[in-house]
Image (tube, rainbow, N blue to C red; front, side, top):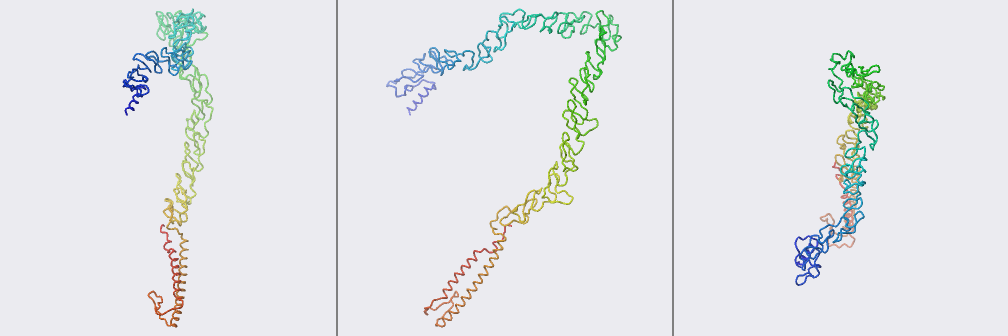
Length: 633
């Protein structure tokens, strides 16, 4: 037992599971028997322990040692004198030099030497993943340590430095040019052209009045006093300084002027130096007018409903013109475009285009129909509704988008979404519900079901001028023909029933079972009634015949016995013997008389008794007539 405990302790120590020093002799190499009389280990210690008695434990990662502050060999994966540094992840078999940490690498993806870093453009614990293409070195696929040639920026060097950076170089973190901008560029990233320049290298001049541009005809900002994409439009004279680049609205008005374009000096409907002039006197449909450069009538800027301002060739100012006649509600904007849609049958910005034929109303933008004439459908209203669809006053015949009938079919003999299906001929008057096809007035004679598509069973009893079965479930109205049962009389009575006849509801045999079976439905074998009626009749006749034969034989035997007795009696009388009748009715002879002749009577008697016994046995083997009666019925 002590030896077993010692072995267990050695194993615990060898596997690094012990939290205490080993006892004397327990941790000796090659077992406890290698300990001398002084309890010193003869062949040294097991891994992890030192001392003459192997009771002291080495440093944590030491495999072997001779003292408490240094190792002679490290456990796999560690190096240095104290075994306190890990070998590189790429070391083959996780083993490295105890002094330098160098090792052969498990693959060429690691840096030769300590195999603790990835070589080339690889990353990962096993250095088996490639860095993003623009990385000089990386930690992962989304984080580069630095970018190639410093001409990229972003977390994984996904962006190229601006062409405006001197030398094309920028800071990896934010893309700011590290050496400044090339001529013609401005901004931290040198990605914007200097005012008045454009093109990829900011070396072309914008148009005359452009302050900044994307191209020869695409200004992004204008010099003071101009607006528009090409900066060729002059801001209104009432603007103080600049106006909106998009539409010329004044950012600030000169003294005494107001309005979006700084062209109004009077309240709506008036103009002039003292605002005494009425706009309507110049244009009856003008609601708001403006001044010209000389302070006179400058034209209408806002018209009454149904009109919009427009400049004609023979006018130097705007006048009010009627909105396009097909604008819905006669409403249009200042540009003369219909704002509230078109009247029916028209489409387009000015509602001058006609909707397609059969199209009552169409989309103002693209002309697609969303209301067709009553008998057409589809986006272009060119498809006809089914001729079988029911028509109603002022209502559509079919759905505009699908063409399905909206108000049923125009005849009760049709059904379906498009009224293109024929009702069943078995429906009364061939009429059915238009949505489902179910018969509307029930079924014709000898048919049943919601769709009258089932025939009554041929096994149903019929009745003159009346339905053979009900029109819903097909149940026979007057019962079943002989030999059938069930609500629809579609089940055949058991062939074990007499005359194959049974109860229509329960299927029980009405006249009993054929020979050899019993039970309400004659489904059970009748072992007692093995003999059939024909067998019973035959057996009865046989019994009577056998009985007659036996009686005849008995009479014949009786006659023979009687005759022989008479002959024997006479013979005895002749010879002087006395005879008596015994208790069994047999002849009894006096022993005093000596009979030297054969006793033929006894021989005859014995033979007759054997014959009688055989006949009786034959009668007992034939069953009595009562055994043929089938009580199971």
